[in-house]
Image (cartoon, rainbow, N blue to C red):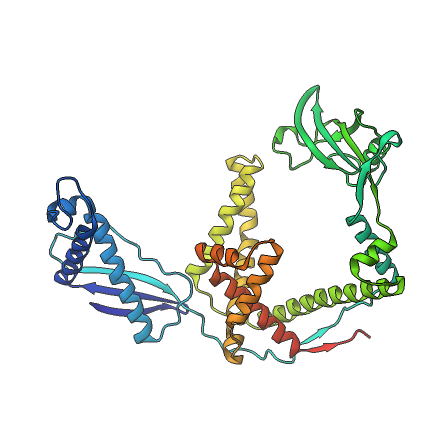
Length: 429
């Protein structure tokens, strides 16, 4: 097999390969023999199926497999001999070929390459800290929020639904005397308004409602309602109260027992520490994003592999079309919205690709690598978050080919942390 490589752009190469007819036919016959050794066909003993019968049943698939084998060989040879740095998944555009003409097989395919660029200085980047101290009010609010999370529901009874209670109810929307939406078994709170209702009127109507009551609130159909012709129209939201609960908050002693502290002072201290850790983690993430943005801005002239860029742009446009279709837009409306959003989509994809290549360039230069311990730790976090076993998570990622994406995300996480750890972080004046 003869393989040639032609550089067709800053981030692209064209790989061409020629397979002599006899060499291809030899590979094809081997494929047929392998198929014949395992196939079971009525009237023939295993391994004794005539070649013509095998060709009729498996010829097309075996030819395709043979061509794909030569494609992989050509790809590996091109990469090795020319020291190419491919990126993304390469596909062979299988065209209609005349395998019986006696001519050699000639094919070519494009390979997307990592851009070649001079990495600008990435250590010592400046960013100003926005880390704010934990205030006493925040500590009180956090403890109160924990109380609400651990609250126990009890029947509201004759007192009716309190403003901070919970109801299980049926919701009915009517417009011009016609029902346009019905939902049963909804869990709602007077302090969390339903879309289309004024929050104050909603809370006022539901507060004090008892089981069996039907309360009504003026409705304005939301702009994201699935039926476009009804959007913006006015009507009525009717809430049929099936169950009404008040929430009984745990005592200070119960909260302290839950958090394994003995005094109110220890409870406040623990809450403050955890809030501080959360704020610090959030601020670290903000700083890392700001530093990566600075690095991206230094490489605005970076060439990008166009095939990879276009594939991601079209993928996002396809997702946008599905979203717009689910919202009820017609073809003309979808086309107009896609045309409007395409420049922004392209800008987002370009920035994402630059970030991807910069992250890997820094990782290569600094020798930042992933270890098996890194992967195991991430699997454990995912397993704990989903209340399952590490083995189940690993199986899911393996079956869905997600380990490569995990590796990309973990590498970016490490590089972002590296940029922050080597940055000049100043305090506000």
